[in-house]
Image 1 (cartoon, rainbow, N blue to C red):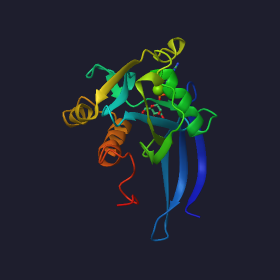
Image 2 (image 1 turned 180 degrees about the horizontal axis):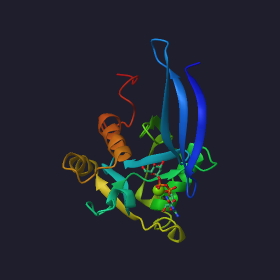
Image 3 (image 1 turned 90 degrees about the vertical axis):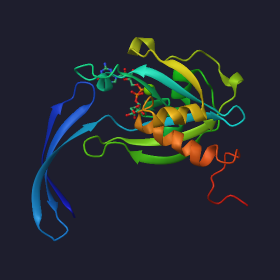
Length: 203
Ligand SMILES: Nc1nc2c(ncn2[C@@H]2O[C@H](COP(=O)(O)OP(=O)(O)O[C@H]3O[C@H](CO)[C@@H](O)[C@H](O)[C@@H]3O)[C@@H](O)[C@H]2O)c(=O)[nH]1
Ligand SMILES: [Mg+2]
């Protein structure tokens, strides 16, 4: 056993839960050390990149993110992101299909899970599940935009994959999960036009 929990204090539980935990940690040399860490628990999340190989396009969403805006307004707060949502009680696959339609209006049936990642493991408990799916222009069943009553005001943006990658390079796209999925698209999805992973593909 590497950890002994001593005390858990809830510092805030208004929207999600912020806790401070004091624990003993057994260092690799066998000695025990006491430390405390704050953790913000919003559950887990899922994110998806919609792509079209023939058109060489992807679908992103632009929305206002107050934490990016910051207290001093040093950033305008608008981020271009791959559509994403918190899981609540659903499985990642169920949630991402519903979320992508809610935010973009595109209905997708087949989604492929590509990887999972802790996005900020120094303080946030969330694990994010990453998906990709092909879309067709005629698979759009509504305007998307998110849930207005929850304050969502989401603009749907279709971008050429090379233009999106250029926006990563010059800083116009600066959301971590989105950069990861666009790089996956460049390395795997659009690499030879087959959409199949390079590793394990029949040559
Ligand atoms: N009242 C209130 N509402 C909040 C608060 N924080 C978030 N919300 C609302 O909660 C909803 C969450 O929307 P989702 O689409 O489910 O989640 P998301 O914010 O897009 O999160 C996704 O991206 C995050 C950032 O990369 C990821 O951390 C997360 O896992 C997920 O993938 C939004 O309507 C948002 O306005 C809050 O503190 N108070
Ligand atoms: Mg969202």
